Length: 554
Image 1 (cartoon, rainbow, N blue to C red):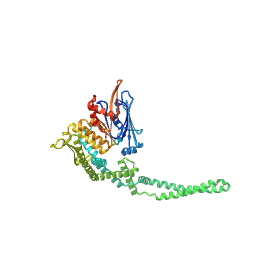
Image 2: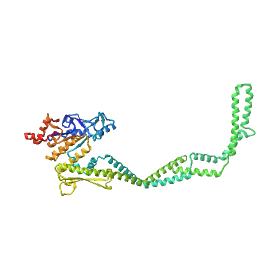
Image 3: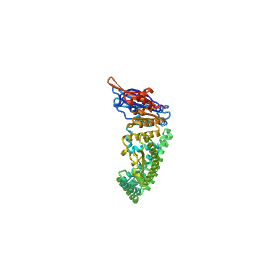
Image 4: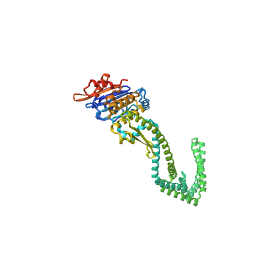
């Protein structure tokens, strides 16, 4: 719950520090005194948008700090733990707004985005404004009320996820249908290209081998002649050849070696040269014998080279890269085939996703129907206490697949009958402003009791209510205050008298500036304030006696 609120230089507040307690606290004061300022300041700590205009005239910045006791608030503790901001059982929210409009937010002393204040705030405080009952006229709000009362967030989340999954598949199919013609043409081209390369079947490295073979066959005559001449020169010419000369050189060095051992290395080199020339002569002779021009093989090689060059030209690549290109095109064709196969299965997947969505949506509908029936009975019971003894409220639920959206397949309409004998009609058609206010208040109290947010704030929600009805409203809020902390800004003494505590907002003017203060009232002061609310500025004995009757002390 909220234990302390500190406000500095906010609007017409110079400094304000409030210690707050469990139960129902009422806030009263003259019209225009600024009864809602503390709530507006707290709203900034809960992530509301900040503007430079909230900074008090003449001040550099406004600063608001709110301290909460989390000892019984597991939701807030879990949020803080998940965001690594947990600090024992207390939580301090702080907001600083400069006169230039810049804003800084803090949770337990750590700077955070304002959005995190709003995210955490939902576990700390629920604020009901004086115009909240106007939202009852919106169908979306009526559905939200039923969901709020039903307290089935997991069902709502399941339906949203199922809807998103189904919608995503539908979007995928729509996009696939738009791409089908383009993909079909692309696939046809790829199939032709891959088939052509399959038939040619050029292997990695094959082009280089063919090119080399083709070159050899193209110069086979030249190779035969040159190799024959070289063989003769090396060792087959009977008159002069290299082997004979090397043999003579080896014989001479062997003889000289006996005279000078230093010639040993030269002798070895000459003998090695003789051996290598002899091997070269033999291999060259064998090579010459194997050279044989094959016109059929040459024609085959010529044809394959021509095909490779033609395919390379068509694909704008080098002949050596055709095998790699072949693999790439095959991979692209496989991917297109998978897309086509995926498209063929999309209809089946969409149907399955739709059935899953419907199953979850129907489950949510049943939960909403139970909640709507129970809530209708409770609201009818409560408004009977609020001077609408013959009225009846009903949340009418219609489930239809045509309503399909992320919130399910339901439409909720709040129907009201204010007088016997009249048909049930939509609330906006039959309820007056006062009746709408009372119905809205009853809904807020009932739903707030079911959710039990630690701190509930009602900002003049009793507008349009007076007399005995106001006393009933006060009793409802006091009963709610036994379950959680309730702060209520009110102008009605019948409501203010039901508070466990009461605070007075006053406005003073000093040296051309206006200052708002808020103070806690003791019992005697409360009686005086209740009497003022009853009788105005001139407090009479009868007004004090009446105030004594209004002050609830149980």
